[in-house]
Image (tube, rainbow, N blue to C red; front, side, top):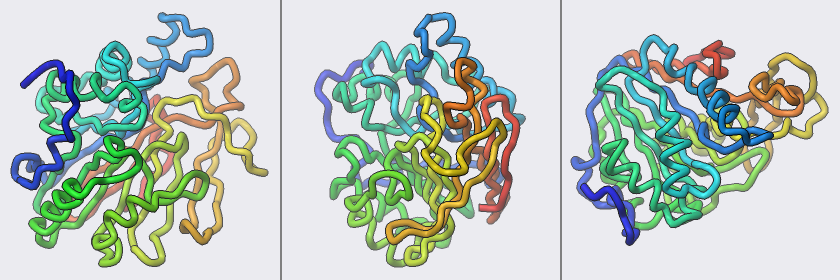
Length: 316
């Protein structure tokens, strides 16, 4: 495989040969996922301070007793340059035992530089065959999308690939992962994604959809029309200011209820301080990640902060 891509073709994962990009995994699987653990965000931008902060975020993954798949949902700041990907994404990737599947999705920040650093990392560090791919076991299929090569969208070939994967999945339940969101209570909507995946949405084929892009943790109730549970897990590393909401204050973690809106279901938002920004912890929202534990036809979701403390565990 080439280590440098000077010309950027379409992601290879949009090919229709599903077998090339599907990987079988254990029925009892633990998957750790987050977004943007690799921004250059230390306030004073001292190299030693930056690396220290990244180590604190990485340590949670390394403390997990089991994590068979580590998945990053995209955005290596600031523009996905080759050195940024090398230093901030690969250089801070958690150390897990041999055999761990390491995967990363494409985000809009990777594409600011044309995606060169990202696609180079796929062929070298990640040994990942494409920017979109699938994992499956006997009960579940996990389809991971590239919504950044065409910004906030999927082209026809990738849609055809998704449909071929799902059509071959039989009775397996479907989880989607992407960088961009199909809808939001607090940010832009995803009409192009809704149109591209209309068949899956209208038949309620999707059990849950995890995305990033927004720098917050929001857990949505099942969508009233499409049925799936939306999960915005964009709180992996970017220093986001706390939401401008009446109850968003104080020095303890809390879940704020967001009433249903025409564009998005009712949801709960994680609010609280960010103890990993010691200069102003109460000014920034918490960082963290999710662990998905697969046990037959049941999946448990656990939301953790960087020191591996769990804030919420529930059946997905």
